[in-house]
Image 1: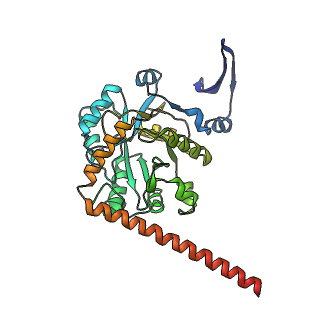
Image 2 (image 1 turned 60 degrees about the vertical axis):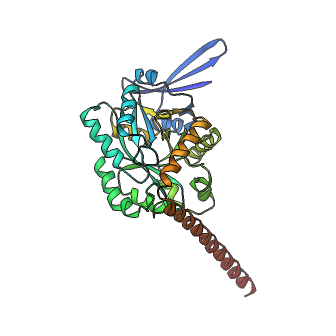
Image 3 (image 1 turned 90 degrees about the vertical axis):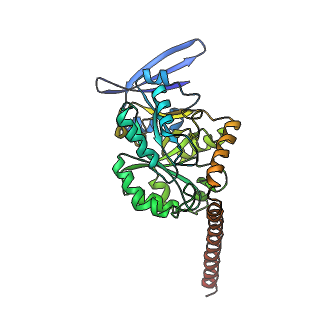
Length: 345
C-alpha cells in the first residue's frame, strides 16, 4: 500500500511515501515536491476518501476539523430541531452545514444560537436547492450575507407551494446565478435514483456543457445512498477533476455525522478553500436500510402537507422532459434532412 501524507514542516512541502509489506513498514522515502506535483497527487480523489465510521476523537486530536456538510432540520423535509443538531455537534466536536431544501431559516437560527451558546462550533452557511428537473445542488457560502442575498434574490420567489420540492429554476440557472457569489457549488448524491440523478442527464446532453465546468465539487459519500452509488460518485469526481465533499444527508440525529469532510482548518473560509484546492479529506459510511425507510417516511409526511403541489411539480417536470426530447428529435431530423439536401444538390 502507498500512503501519501501532506505536511508543512519549516515551510517545506513534504510527502512521506511509506511502502508497507506484511512484515511491516520496510522503507520510508522523504522528498520535497513543488505545487504542481502536489496538485497532481491530490487530484486523485480516491487517496482522500475512506469508507468507514468517522472517528471524531482521533481526527480532532490530529488537528483536523470535521464537518457534516449535508444536514436537514425541521425547516426542511424532517422534524429535527436546530437545538438538538447543535447539541450533538458540541458533544462530538463536529462542525455542520445546515442544508435545508430551498430554505435558510434553519441556518440563520443555528448561527444565532451559535453566537449565544456554541461559539466553538463551525457552522458553514449552506443550502440544498431542488432544481426544476430534479437533481439537487448544494451551495456553501463564505458569508451569511451572501447566502441571504442569494436566497432573497433568486430562491425565495421561485419556491413552489411545497417548499421542499423542485423550484422554478433549472440546474443551469441555479449554477449560473450562484457563480456570481463567493461559494462552493457541489452536486448532491449525483447517482441517486430516478429524476434526482445528475450524471445521466449530463451525459445525455440534457444540460449545457458549461454547467459541469462551473461545478466545484461532487458529494462522493452520501450516507443515504448505496455504496455502489457513492463509488460511482468518486469516479465522477475523478473523471471531471472536481473537489470532493461528504455528508450524512441526515434527516434524523442518529444519522448525523455518518459522513464528514475534514481538513486542517479553523474557519469557514479556510475549510471551503481547502475543498476548492483539493486539500480536504472525506470519511463516512452508508446508513442501514431501516434508517433509510425511516428517513423517507418522515420526508413523505412533510411533502404530503402539500400533496397537490408535489404531484403538480412532478407532472410538470415529466412533461418538460418529454417536450425537451421532442425538441432534440426535431433538431436531429432537421440536420438529417439538411444533410440529405446538400448531398442531392
